[in-house]
Amino acid sequence: MSKKSSSITFRIDEKSERGLRKLAEENRISLNTLANQIFSDYVECEVFTKKFGTLKMSTDTFRRILSVIPEKDLVDLAIRGGSQEAKEFILFKWKKLNSSVVHEFVKMYFEFCGYGRCDMEKTEGKVSVSIHHDLKEKGSLYLKHFLESLIRSTIDKPCTTTTTEDTVTLSFQP
Image 1 (cartoon, rainbow, N blue to C red):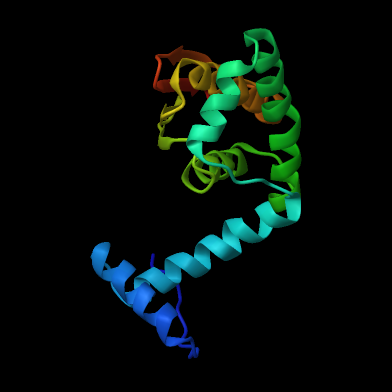
Image 2 (image 1 turned 135 degrees about the vertical axis):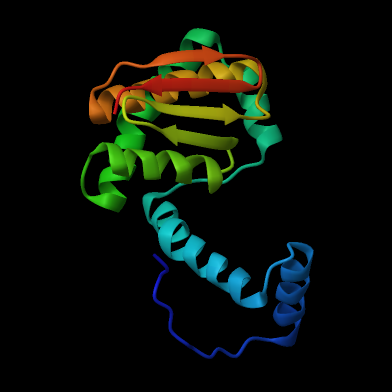
């Protein structure tokens, strides 16, 4: 099912137009598709992350912060982040807690916030989430506990998790 679309006209400065056209060409997409992606990201994510008070930082900075935090404190931060802050954000944006909005949050968290690349697969009896990131071993530890506490606190499901230095794979029943 395709989304309904409408036509709208904007005036933008020439420098922005050149930049947008260059980005569209580099990504091998139409200018229209790029504009839709930009507007969608803004409306679906950016507005809520700004209102909620989310910070953006480089992967290198986050990796350096993770490297100096003692493991016990890192686990505590991840559990609090997944069980409290993520839950609060979900309620702030979607106004409800269920497996569908948790799925949307996880996609947004990784695609928009930059914590890694996320692949999700949902079958009849299992949801699998695989994350590949650039945060090293402590990043895997953080993401493991963040995601496990998110799933437990929002949809009350136990998880099975496997980690490596650069990946976290989590599965649970829907």
